Image (cartoon, rainbow, N blue to C red; front, side):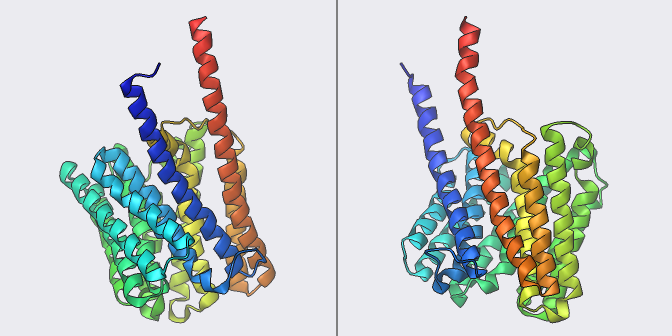
Length: 375
């Protein structure tokens, strides 16, 4: 018979799992819309839904995931309003609600996330918590721009800085073990401030602003590659090495995005814009997600995801497909770009499949281990 404590733990896991599922649903819907927008003949994908690819992926999926992570970490009930509102926005969007309503709900979620980060900063005053707060402000700015402009395209620069800043903050927290020099943290804030000024000046919509944003992204990639602990954990086998490989390859793609934006900043045509965005959102961000998935599942759901060498399969498919997509963009090859896009979707599908299998295997082995211990 379950005690009250175990019942509360089960209820907590179920509520977190439902929010995580809503985030994953937004991810799947975003991929589906993205395939249709790229010209892949998929059912239930209409041109009117194509502009929703970005909102489903960033405020929908990543907003829910990051908000849930922070709420779990702070252990304050009101913080869960952020992922709940993000999940609600996704459900409304999939139900066909007017886009301005959905954008407003996502904006409310971002406001709560900003408040969450303020609470975190007050409780743990440090450079990385300040950066988490400033990054959440970028999400709020992007969502507000979406509401004001009735188009998600002008928000992409802000959403880019939200994700880059959040990941940089999390890696900064861990980099303290290697005792970086005193100038390291101010330098990171400086290069990200260049990105903020560039986005506020027009971001991807204005050539010089796109150039400045590219410089900021490239410099941030160099900073993380220089000061991250991944170089140390790369020497350890199993999960630590996989995490390190994922992190370092992600930093490389962020650098590539910055270099492309810098090189083409004075002529950022549509295909180059696609290359920059997906070098960041796929090559960089999903490398981080693939690397940290075992940690995320353990933190949010208290579920183990044992390392398996198959993890390197979806990692490899992701990076090969991003390379194909970006090469197709820059070379003007529809063939390479299309196969890259299909590979992107396959990599995420493999990641979800392998992760689910590993979670189920771990859950199945736990009762068996308990029975052996009793025997």
